[in-house]
Amino acid sequence: MQLLLLVLGPAAAEEPVARLSLLRLRDFMLPTLSGTTPHLNLLPSILQAVDPELQKYMAPTEPFFALSATLTMYAHDIEEFSDITRLFDFLLAHEAAMAVYLYAAVSSSRRRASPACAVIPGSPR
Image (cartoon, rainbow, N blue to C red; front, side):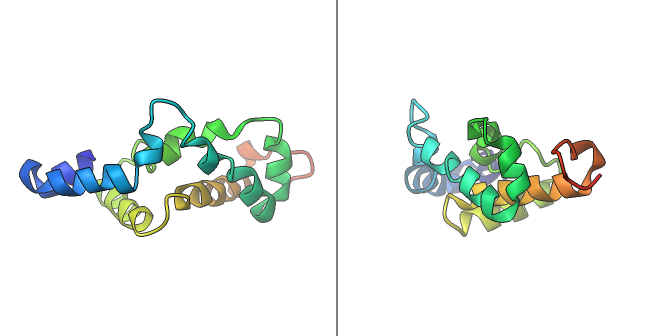
């Protein structure tokens, strides 16, 4: 929301922020996680398809570890304004679950690229 305020200015951002809140972020803005949980519960199935070893490693854990990244559309993980705006454009042009698909892709990619993440038995070191 702050991004829209920054780009559009307070007066012009009012309507887009209201529409985005109502139509796009509603599930994530409820007083409980009841709307967010179905999105996060997609993660194990997506990981199973993308990276079965990672899914097996993460299986004992509830997928709430992805909450902050998917809830903020990665804005707290990325420092460059141009990168944040590009990612917001991508995520807002897709269904809300795209943030979860992206989380799975990034997690799998990081695990494969970083020896520090190679804690899964049988994974390449």
